[in-house]
Image 1 (tube, rainbow, N blue to C red):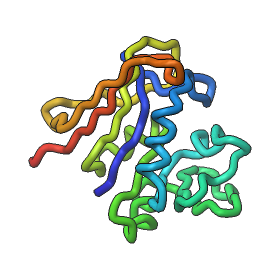
Image 2 (spheres, helix red, strand yellow):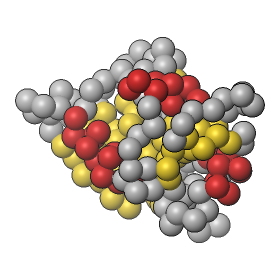
Image 3 (tube, helix red, strand yellow):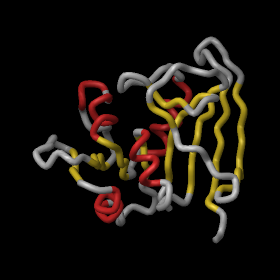
Amino acid sequence: MITIIAAVSENNALGKDNGLIWHLPEDLKRFKKLTNNHCIIMGRKTFESLPKMHPLPNRHNIVITRNKDFKIDGVTTCHSIEEALKVSSYDSQPFIIGGGQIYKLAMKFTEKIELTKIYKTFDADTFFPKIDENKWKLVEEKFHKKNDINNFNFSYLTYLKKNK
């Protein structure tokens, strides 16, 4: 089951200047828990935004780039979303982790979306594609109030692609 995982604001913002706009520790823990021991597929810019540009541990890091010379130890380089999905086909649930262009490309292949919705609007330059309610069904929603650790109200939303 190919799964997109993302955190977005009320205006579907993902990030700005190749970085996250917010810090939500609980969501980072959830991301780690869900993606641990799975393939994670991302674009080159998303990889470059990771701390110290190191592959995330306990995951098969797959980076999509047009740059034929891009090589990083511990990373599988692919040159299309189709190639990345083929490389990850041994995994029962590969995760698409961004960024904006990769989410758009992956949407037609994806069967599930794990979305963290942050109830605030942010200035951004990268956005998540609009979820078409005709194609996707919201199957789970869990609201979390802001607290001492998490500075925003947010929800975990799980969508499944509707049958055609």
